[in-house]
Amino acid sequence: MVKEILKCTKSLNLLYVEDDELIQSVYSDLFSNLFKSITIANDGLEALEKYKNNKFDIIISDIRMPNMNGIDFITKVREEDENILIIIYSAWNELENLKPSNNLNISGYMSKPIQTESMIDIFKKVLCTNR
Image: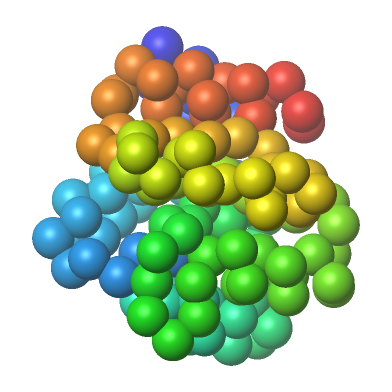
């Protein structure tokens, strides 16, 4: 299954937004094996700056972060690009609070901790089906 996903991801540039250093380290290692390049931001404000200065194909963003939360960050991105693929991932109990994201054209949702099988399913759906 991973080889199938690689066909869809290996040419993509990812912006990965996560404020927890341990989680960031674990998933950035994983994502670096799947994507052409990965740029990491520690919060929504830093992510917005990096987004404005680079070209990304996909964003994977946490929601609860300091300085600028994920919903505010994604709202700003959507003001400039309605089509970039965005996957939100957040703690399971926070997914209930994502109603503000309904109008943001979110491509997919993952809950923390990310289960490999569900991540592969989301990537297949979002990255392989939509391209």
